Length: 396
Ligand code: NI
Image 1 (cartoon, rainbow, N blue to C red):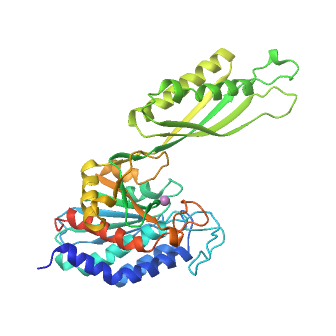
Image 2: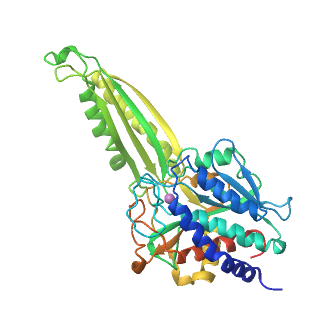
Image 3: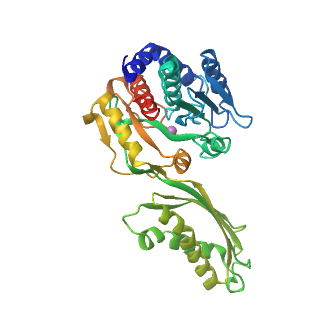
């Protein structure tokens, strides 16, 4: 009997051309977060035509597909995100976006095509599998709202023992894989602060409480939290993005609203920051006779990889691209990814699929209007996710 990986790789070779065509079709028809309707029905049609079980949601356009050989055994899950970005594509190739102002500029078309390709390949060899695999086609990743949390609430992780996802990466060459143990991407929280003062004539400031001055002091103080209260070995960002207030040039302002975001890669630091912020704001308001409202929203958690699962990625990738092409990404990045929510529930790993190729022009950064993915990376992504699934099913 042939090794399972040989069966898998042969099955992948048979679907490779089709997967590239599917990726181009998705690229040509991008849809924004929460609006992935065409993408959903496109995938559903392909999966059902192959006899793969598909579960739809009533609340969003995400899909769950299952290949089950033994209902008593757990599942290994592979996740793809499906949404595009509000960017007008400037690429001129034949499959460039037909939707003005919408573009797959983050490679989610490739993620979806790769996971679909793995589903087709594993389905073709399903009589040889001794475990179960689930494919999560997730909406709304870019807005970090809904997406993974709704999929989880609807049971996406039921009976799942491990989960994997990849993300295209133009900073690595096609043929390279990037991995990182521990925290790979930051948590992303939002906050809102309101400062209340007392209005008076601008010429008689002593009769009012100037919310603008109090805000200026608060902004200054909030910007000192990271530099003076947090261990410099734990990266954190507190950024204020909006500020609104005031009615007229000759009136002391009585109300200012601020909004911002906090990014961290450490659980303790993340949970200590809201208190530090509030202590700072409260102290300033007290000294200035102002009052405040402080609202902090814990958003997506950090992407915290399981070290054992990362080892499996390295082991599987070494066999596909060679150990020298498995790149340890030393530092986490402060961007967010809602895959972190799955990793809060089950062990798994998120890793980077190199898609950079100078001659093909695929080294352009993500979220850029000229971003594109090297199609040669699709087969590597399929082999790697497929191998990880086989290993978890006991067929590796
Ligand atoms: Ni992305």
